[in-house]
Length: 586
Ligand code: PEP
Ligand code: MG
Image 1: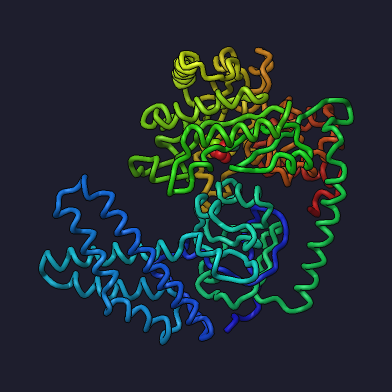
Image 2: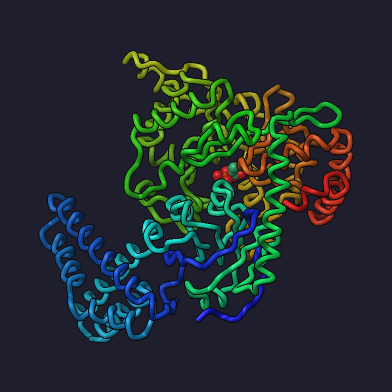
């Protein structure tokens, strides 16, 4: 039964409007959560359960074979015990009963059935039974993981839907079938969480902060309007509201198409200052399409998304082919490739060796590459240098916090060059090496880095979170996470000044680069390039063509007089409304 019409306010993180029915990405839902289904859905849920069971059996057998030689017989027996549980008729019958009689979806049924059996076993005062309870939970988790794998989304529904989840990880997001997804409405996260970044690069409307209560009550029968401009989510809208939103969607698309038609115009302010517009890309994007949106090159290629598929890590040749293809398609345009930035909210258990309490402050990005995964780092650098022959490549390093990390990487690159030369493998010898300024430490020694690096790219997503000490993925501190915070502006100012002194270019590649209200400040501070999701380029270009450097510089000096970010943003909003009101509608 669809729930009654209601409207809730969430936070918009990717613009656009989506209208459609709900699809649960159950991986993001708490295990305790019960999702009801309609009687007509029983059969498909039973099928999903049986497919997940079959997949679980297959994985357990493969694991047993793979580990047979490495493990003691008693350790390998664990897999036999788990296999027996998966084949246990009492357990499977209980799950089937819950689906068909209690009308709950497969994940809820597995969770409840496994809890029931595991609780009964752990209540017995005997270590043997208590261990079996753990086995049951373990197997239950594995079946649920198989049920929830993003792959499942490919087969579940005929028509595209809006993905609903409590949390959505970046790897789940990359795994989604774009054809089947209209947008996202998620409980946790923020505009700069990598999930939101991916939503923007997929051009899908998204909101975060969906109330828990609503999430608990929605079913696949419910229809939503997700307004990625205002953050509103309308549940089961009446016909009039739906039509009004469809109209709004068409109008926004019309304005956007007009701006897209101007994408060849150069991003030059009215008084002749050029701010280049480059693209942020994640994985295998099509450069020809990006170019049509108005990019002069790629300002950030987040290569870690090539490594987010848990099942395999791309080897040197595979990476080489991907980079080479991109270089060739970009022709003479600059392609800035960032080395692996695994860690933080981008986790891959095949790469990271230990679970950390504070992954954003842990072995992330360059730290992981230098300390623990030199193997992966060297492989990537070799692939990059080989592909560098095919175009205009720059390499940049993420999460740099001290000079040593930069020098160590330079030495590694020099060593790899000698290896490649000794083997007569062609490689590019002079790829510019840049530093991402995304820790306050790096910003504060920008004078030193500017003497060593070939370019800077300011990663505001992280710079803001580390400066303000506000987790970029945590909606509970979203009110503090402000790009216009005077401390952030000061760090950007200092970074740009030091880059100018050493005559190296400075780009901004975080979300701030496409935040229209922040752009006048970045222009006024003298940033040379803004790198952003391709969808934002037509809007940003239009804004730059309307601004004058003189008024941006004035705005910057007024911003430094402000005590807080709200005043800063208001000044710029006023200016944008005056100059280009249509930009507030897309
Ligand atoms: C940033 O931190 O601003 C950035 C561009 O990198 P990422 O968002 O991938 O951390
Ligand atoms: Mg970053």
